[in-house]
Amino acid sequence: MTTTTLLSLSSSSCSFTLLRSRPTIIRPLRFPSRNRPGFVCREPYYKCRAAIAGDLLRDVGATAAVLVGAYGLVRSFDSLTKLNIIQQSLSRKLVHIMSGLLFVVSWPIFSTSMEARYFASFVPLVNCLRLIVHGLSLVKDEGLIKSVTREGKPEELLKGPLYYVLILMLCAVVFWRESPIGVVSLGMMCAGDGNIYAYSINSFCIPLIFLISGQSYVGFADIIGRRFGSMKIFYNPKKSWAGSISMFISGFLISTGMLYYYSVLGYFELDWVSTMQRVALVCLVATVVESLPTTDFIDDNISVPLSSMLAAYLSFGY
Image (tube, rainbow, N blue to C red; front, side):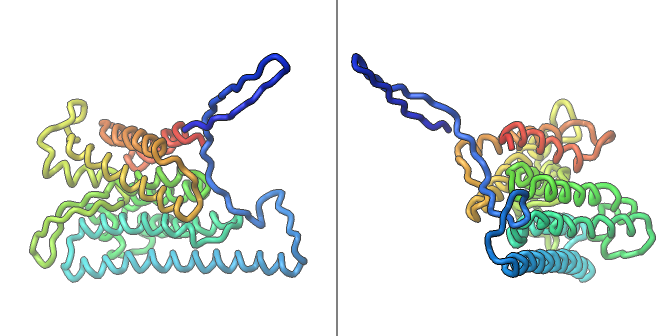
């Protein structure tokens, strides 16, 4: 998108108008922060202190609410698995799906202070420590292991799930609500497990499709690929065209939806034509990286979000 600047020049002998076009820089809308460098409080001292205390209480309350929500989410699906209402594999994917969405959509409930991002990142930090403790078998929690691992082994907690929460922390601290890069990158990470085709309810298999997000990039492509993946990608026989196409579509929808969510709340001001083009480019890069035969060297939960961040940075520029 471009804006046009109108320049008028006149003299005694001639006059003409010059049209000059320059690109529009799309910037996120940054709300005033009392703790941002350079901020000067013009209110009485006691009012400034009260405002800062209010931000602190809000951030503490938001952190507690998200922690309770995340813990309750895991326990809920653990109970459903024990009651044989849903399969363990579906429980694992849905936990990853809902926890990722819960974290991203909760950012607006935190205050506008500079410290708000650190309060938010405290939630994945707690989960990170929890995964390390249980992954090293220092404490046993069979419910947690069954909910977030593929084979029910404690050491699995130190791989995909741990990488996942580290990426959540990185995006919260570095990008926060001030850049589309973090939102789009998390959107792609969420999209990795985003298309769940079938699950079991009391031994009855009901095919469903959920275009929602999750933790492992492999999951989304794996589910669709196994059922519709007769056409393999020529450079990686373990991947299918159906799985990769599904990942691209879900990643695009979720990332665009997250950007719309934050733009409605006033955090971003975007030109949607160019934004959708940029998001499509990021999704393409992430999908290609996910399809590469590199899983023996680097986990998809590392390579895909990092490549998404790089592509988003080059596309959005901030």
